[in-house]
Length: 190
Image (cartoon, rainbow, N blue to C red):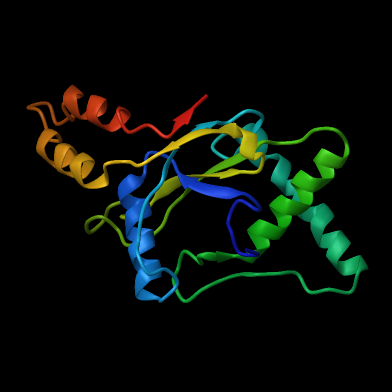
């Protein structure tokens, strides 16, 4: 798709089985799928263009300038991120810049296997919060050999376990048991 945030690839939510299921159900409401489902995967990031690391986001400043120059030289219009929501979910500009940059560095012998990025999305979790309800980390797998295996996650069981074990302790932090429950449904390794 020309609007996928991280450019070309097979997309996964990192530790986001519930978010993936919500997305699948939304696709069902839109008539794009008949039966929503979630597939878990064990993904080895390999050579990752990790947008959670400033070493990579710094590269995007020059990548954008080069892409804009390329578009202008070819008499084209620069794509725009758009949507009716404030988070502009249709990321055509981001997709184009990332694809342009990653394809150009690959042509010089530096292929990236995956792209990883965090996205602030949705409504605020509560008034005044800096936490947003649909924020997540996504991984775009460009080299499918990095998908080591797939499995069927137990989304509903995981959600119930999470709800039961995520009780604030007296100090206000979450119990360690919840960390183990969350880690048991891992979808990524480094």
